[in-house]
Image 1: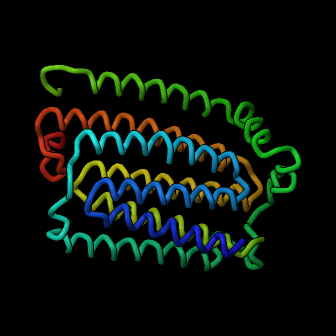
Image 2: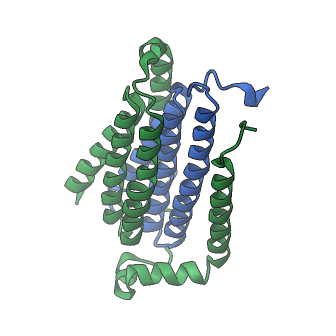
Image 3: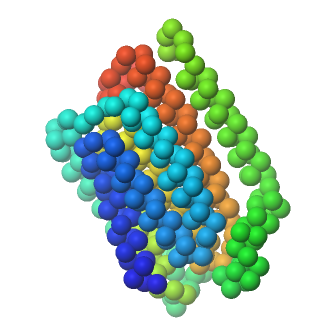
Length: 177
Length: 101
C-alpha cells in the first residue's frame, strides 16, 4: 500500500510541477490530467471509491476536455516570456517550499496527530470496515440525501447559475461589457 | 492509525503551494485557471484524508461539492477568457488590468 502511495504521490507532485513550469499551455493541461489521475489512485487508497470515479469522470474527463478545447480554440502557443520571469518563479518556488515545510512541520509535530499517532477526539461511525459492509456508494448517497441535503441542493442551484452565466457571457454581441 | 496520514497531508500542502505559486507567477489566464484547479484538488485530497482517518463522511460529501464548484468555476472562467480573446486583447493577465481600475 505504501509503495502505491509513494508512486502515486510522486506522479501527482510531478504533475503539479508540470502545470506551473510548462512553457506551452497544452503541456500544462496534460500535466494536470496526470496529476488528477494520480489523485484518483490516492482516493482509492483512502477508501473513497466514488470520489475517485467522479474525479476521473468530471475532472479528467469533462473539465479537462473543456480546457483542451479552449486551448485549441484560442491557440495561445508558447508563453514566450517565461524566461523573463525567472525572479518571480524563484520567489514563487521559495514561497511554495516554505509553505509546504510549515504545513509538514505542523502535521508531524502533533497538531493534527496525537501522541500515539491517533487523531484527537472520538472517531465517527463510518470506519472503513463499516462503510464497506454497507457499500461505499450507498453510505455516501445516504449521507448526501439526508444529512447534507441542503448543501447538495445549493450545489445544484450553483450549477444552474453557472450554466446560465456561461451562456450569457459567451453570447455573440458587439462589445464585451 | 496508518502512518501514511502525514504523507497525504504533506502532499496536499505541496500541491496547494505549487498551485498558489503558479497563480502568482504565471500570466497566461488558462494556466492560472489550471493552477486554481490544482489548489481545489489539493483541498479535496485533504478533505478525503481527514474523512478516512476520522471515520466520518462529511469530508467525502464536501469533496463532491468542491468538484461541482470547480466545474462551474471553470465554465464561467473559460467563458470570460473567450470573451476577452474575442474582444481582440492579448491573453496576458498583466495587460488585462482594466477590471481593477
